[in-house]
Length: 277
Ligand code: C2E
Ligand code: CA
Ligand code: CA
Image (cartoon, rainbow, N blue to C red):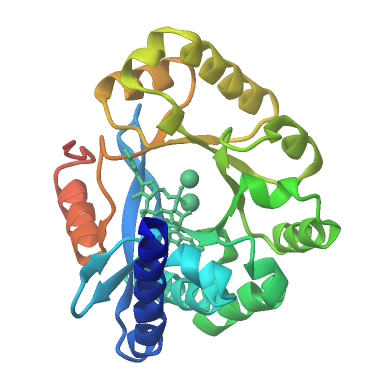
């Protein structure tokens, strides 16, 4: 009966979220937070990732883990994703108008989006609508999306790549078939999650594995970004083994667009030194 009760609570929570969704779109409650990607060697901000947040009027700031799995299971994720991509494009357009065309934003694509949308049409349409460069809108696709060996999926990705979009393989190393996937799929950038490494692992097997992944990326001539970097120790180690681009709490937690722009301003004024937290 405890189990039934837990199920019932979960069911009710899910229903609450679903009830609130339409309002959330209508009232612009979904926003993007940005997290910088920093070159640890030069201290330059080289890119950012857009991560969705729900500014819920009653529940406060909700992280994606609290609503994305539900939207995915109900076939509603592409509605949200398209909204997020639009917000990212709008931001890129604003930066373009301000002369900051060097800034790029990476957006997340759910595996489910491939089923519900013609992603080639959607992304080329957005570029057209906002008059921005496809180089500035980077597309993150989780590694496991490729593992399903979907011919159609790979075709779509190839078309996007030919159109000039940069494709990033998200969560590399967390799935089952990384190497195989890498062999068979057209991606431009590898994003490697540090989550599997606790601080001390750096001196053990984890370190060797990371080193191998980084040299493999170099060999394939693919840029590699380390995600989830929380300590100076990790950043230094990664830089030493040839992975300079770092995204993680060590430099900056994902923050509102306003905060991000303030960081950029400060950063430019102070001559390219980002303040670490
Ligand atoms: P992800 O794409 O792997 O994004 C990175 C996640 O790691 C983010 O969580 C980020 O806040 C977190 N993170 C960044 N640096 C650190 C760090 O140093 N330490 C730790 N422990 N975590 C760090 P967030 O924002 O909660 O997003 C979770 C996931 O939700 C994302 O994982 C992504 O898969 C998904 N997501 C976020 N936004 C969207 C979206 O617009 N559409 C879709 N389909 N999925 C999204
Ligand atoms: Ca991502
Ligand atoms: Ca990731």
